[in-house]
Image (cartoon, rainbow over all chains, first blue to last red; front, side, top):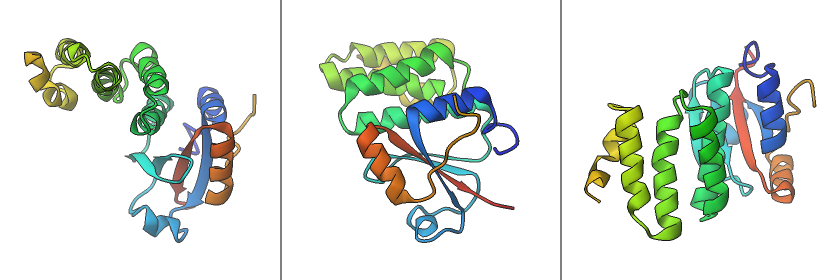
Length: 150
Length: 33
């Protein structure tokens, strides 16, 4: 991460503007125990009260790190029922990082996010259809499979 | 734009900034090698 991703100007710009970056050694206590850290790099997305909402273990290239962080931020908002803010971050992944590993989960969560904010089940079916079309066989296409019936 | 990431080093400082700036925290556990 120090050699490739963190020096990347796009990553620096994204992190500087969208999250509060906090860095500690993997043996730093009590955080290492509190967050059950067993391997590095481990990147955890937290809300302002220190509650975990998303986690990534292992190296992420810049093209994966940014959408991974967008997904983490979206989950912070989603879990707080701040659906409009969650949607902004999810849409960014879908539009700008569609080839990233975070994209299928973002499409799934976008459907759930829209359903929870409107009570209209149509976005769930649309999420399934997009996943089946663009990411067939992905974990998230499988998880959305029941929504084909809506 | 900063030429490097300006990391906070304590949870307390990060939480205080997260509240005041309404942002999430990116907590990176690293191995100093």
